[in-house]
Image (tube, one colour):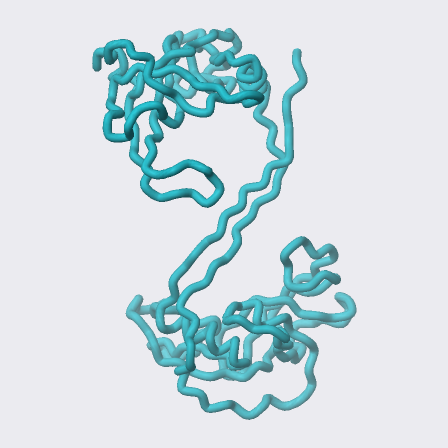
Length: 313
């Protein structure tokens, strides 16, 4: 049995969000070294602030300044900080109820060790040297035994308010495609497409998963399909992805390869986007050294009859 493939995989993308008036004031306040909460209908001050009342679901905008000092309500020690976390040395994740607030804020607490941290300890904000209007403007919390500082009496209105944020989302993990997809990937290296046939319903699934999703039985019989196929459905992409060197608009389609019982995804090229249609017969186009088709292009054959692919929509 060939060795099952595995490889490190990183899924990463920038998440862009526009801010409403409450979150805008909160993040702009952090830039100005001010912590703002919002008063709910029951009188509680919520920090971090919510845009809608957790009891009534109504919009709330009554901003309240709270102190940058507070009390640890609960905590957990982080022995091994990871990439992108607030501190590079061991620290505590802590829920801190700031003075004047009724809810707790989760952030890092810088302490020499777990023995130095306890529920009820007093802490204060350590501000980042460079602040841009983000939660990272609070570098961390640190132990503090003094009195709360005097408020700034801000109204929550600032010059040049923060109106949007971009947060990088990233997931690092090791992916193994399993026995069935390892065979599929290895076959693609030879410019062949291989699926697996269900011993019960006899459908050929591409890419194979090692089991039939309909019958729930294991699949093992390999079947080569294609290379030609039929466009079953498609969409026209009008938004350019930052990591793809493909000009918009372009067409992304479900393609039922000849002999397959399941349609797979592929880009359609070699034809104007507004001429792509259901039933279009296509074939793969490979680039030098590639392990999968770059795109599919029309074969010039007559369109497939709807009845030949209607079950694959």
